[in-house]
Length: 462
Image (cartoon, rainbow, N blue to C red; front, side, top):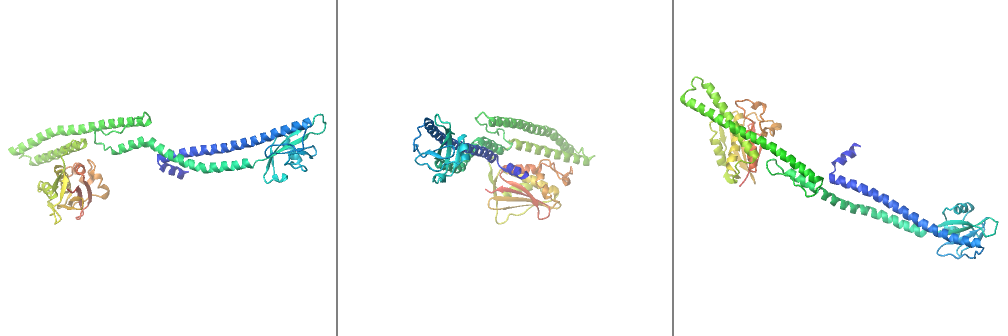
């Protein structure tokens, strides 16, 4: 039973509802067709038997009155015989056999008891079977055994009607199912349209907008209640997200002032020579303050990006070489040299971006490469038909393929990068991806030619 259940669960809700509805309709139509066929058949034979019994009653009245004519007058295709107790034909209709009784003695008893029986038409020289009813009658004043009035009728018309009805039901049954399936398919689609609208709207919700809500249908039904409930849930999620953003932004803002004060005091102390007694301690404090300041700036940047309140200037055409030079120029005096590969004859490459955001994203990529490189960092660029690829490669330890997406998550630092002095906060790559995504690009990590890590930022060409 597992396979049918698994197959059933793989079907869409629309198909399942259609199959359930069709199964019910097919069963109802089958039962209804069988009942109609049976009722019409019973009614036809009952009407035929009633006509035969009416004729038998009239002939029996003639027998009782002693006025039985010969031949017996009948209407339609009825065949009438009057036989005595020994089975001899006393009188018959014009079409009836006057020598041989139509029924055998045991059949006479059955018919006289009120049951209709069917006999072959060959007993009366007919090709069609006959349906026979009978009744008892005794002439008035007679003490002999009563005679039997036999009335036989052909019922080929009823059989023909039965065949036509059965054929009609068999032909119209599947056609009717097909028509009803088409109607049900459209009706189910219309009924599920509000659900599809909710699904489509939910798929478009990114989580960053303030007014992202699901459409509420006008009908006051279960879908209406579901939409209201989901929108209420989105309101609660938005409120929680706003509280989180507000907390991050407020914390970062509150930390900026004491950090700026500490940095100023350290600068003044260095200028006045007050840190001569313990230069190592002063240098360590200055490094820690700088690291905390960068962390606070990163938190503020993420809070703005999450709230979608970061400056959103219009993208403009910018030369990639100018962006790279601006980024590298501020990072010349780092632990390892940052080298820029000259642009080939295919350049210069122009991208359509927001320069400030891309400069910060590239700066984060370069800082990450410098932090992990052994001897040098190489920055290069090339282009294809629709994108410009800026590659920042180092010769460090690299990142395992299974971790290359995880490092873009916030506050994610791999084991080898968890040193508090050399390791970052785990926000640089997350900010870089957010900024590049805002400009219509993407970032991916691959193995560099030197065996380290290669960060490739793809930006749309102008």
